[in-house]
Length: 94
Image: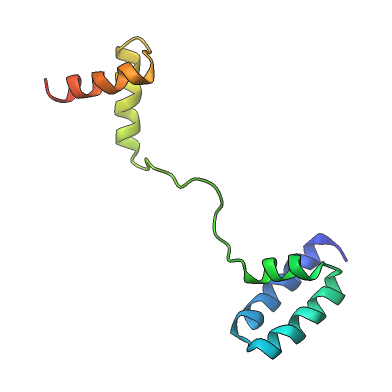
């Protein structure tokens, strides 16, 4: 079975699996493992996972803030982060 068809199968079965009772989940899991030839524990992990984005969450989404920091960094001749932190306080309260 190709990876694309395995992903399609996962999308269809995942909704059924999450709504099923415990005995129903066992049956769905057995069939999913047979069809896709996955290990049982890996299949459980796939079926229980949601499509959350992995990695660190973004801290700064504001474009204006990033532009301000970039211009400040350029105006301070590209100083290091420790000194830039002190410079931010100086530039904001002048």
